[in-house]
Length: 97
Image (cartoon, rainbow, N blue to C red):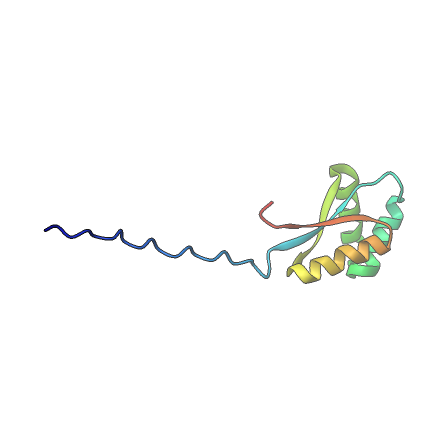
């Protein structure tokens, strides 16, 4: 008499972990806000010095976007919401995107 062997159990799937850091806030170019205003927002909200804020603003102007902060997702959502309150177009994305 032959015994039937049951198939070996497959390993449990490894749960995917969501990183708590590795997110960034991106400000996008828009046809509405003046470049000087965007620079002022970066200085005011992020505490950038005048030169750093100017360079980020120029990156937005010439490249259409600039990363303005990096960190945990919750903070990036807060930063993006703050940019919206200033009238800027901002999104969050994973640093890997």
